[in-house]
Length: 273
Length: 335
Ligand SMILES: Nc1ncnc2c1ncn2[C@@H]1O[C@H](COP(=O)(O)OP(=O)(O)OP(=O)(O)O)[C@@H](O)[C@H]1O
Ligand SMILES: [Mg+2]
Image (tube, rainbow over all chains, first blue to last red; front, side, top):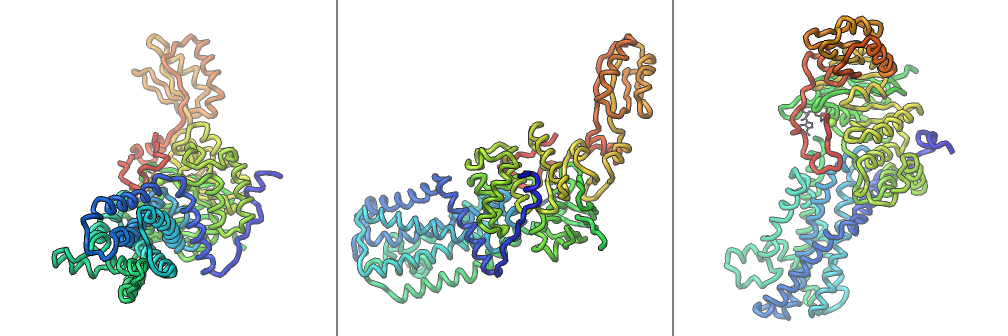
């Protein structure tokens, strides 16, 4: 076969399908690409897994003895907080990944192709969802090793995992918005993280809120991370609390309703330059 | 049917804050030809390419590529063009073959066709051996070839290459020239930007010289060289050598007016095909026993073009243009 001919005159015909099918397919193509990268930059995944493991060990063995009023063993209390914090921190990789693609010119490449425009964002949020699912499994195992004993029906545990994944997905869109709003990868990194520390620590994730000063307690008891942690904790310890479950779901859906359009707008503004 | 040019841009304008990146740019390339867009840093080359490839909307003016409007028919157009940007846009953490298959799938090719196409292009660009290595381990030239391969997945009728050889060593540059010539002889219309007159001369049928966002001269390479002066010998006669005798020896080679600076003992001889005459000139001067301090064959550079066209050399902008460039594998290497 003449090579040169094959370069310019192959029978190349794109497959015709409805647009929304292609939107899904393109998102999956990009999600797959993002996931393929994970084992090739192992330090990133290792770091993002080791960090919560260190948190588990520190809280379990350093503070565990001193913290009372949890109504159960501290490790049982702690794990819901660890899960929530891990997926929320993990969702920052969405904005960092997007900022990286932008800096490396890959988003220009994608935009020059006749693919679905939405796929860059949906592909990235999907792959981070899968990644967070993996991290939840790792943390669950670590928890069991240090004495975590989930209680009640297994179905509840899956419900807890489902709520955590929804949380991860919602926070990914916040992260995407931040990643597209700031101008460098480094900024995406710090701006993505910094506000999550007060949000996850000033909550019921690691300690009961009763001992906090009143002003802090008012915040801590009503902010979404506490609600999510309480819902997950109830589901894992056989005390499902439907109020916090509904409130958490409402928060996640609310975040998605607000931040999907914001992320899309930030992406459009950013790439229009 | 009247045949429309493959690329037609009229009055393109684009402003970034205080910078008027494009100030009414007009370009035209007939189907099957190569248009070379020649300009210094900051001239607006990349901005023009981004508009023509639908990545950026112009503030004013309009453009059609392959018969489609770049703004209103952007989506259809994307299926008919290929773009290899100024910096190779390949995924460092994927292998060569994964990169191409991903792009092919995003062009909505069937899986089997995508795989086959990736293999063809890897073979064509001499990347088969490296196909299963992650791109992080590729050299600059390999990345460029892979990037070009990605832009050729659909065998697009119109191809945009933004400084395709900047940062490549001379050998990789030659191989890139070969590849581009091959594509053109197969009928692809190519718009390429460059900072090197020599490159535009080698590859382009038409050249548009761009400065400060507009075309300041256009025509064939020969047209431009006529304005600029083409190749020339630069000869310095050693002290004690006979300058007048040297001028007599050189006169038959001269294609126009020789420039003589008597006190520097410097002679500029405009020539055609200088390389082929170099040996003869040396022989003749030697036979006439004229001692030389220096003899060189000079080709006009971008600076010479600018000198001739604007009376000033190409102003090289401070590289404030984009942080996006930072940390990319192909650092800009300007001569
Ligand atoms: N995204 C941007 N934001 C602000 N200014 C920009 C942006 N992109 C380009 N410019 C400015 O517009 C002008 C033209 O830039 P452009 O990148 O088109 O030049 P170029 O001819 O491609 O230069 P080079 O040879 O350095 O690649 C420059 O002054 C540049 O600083
Ligand atoms: Mg440029």
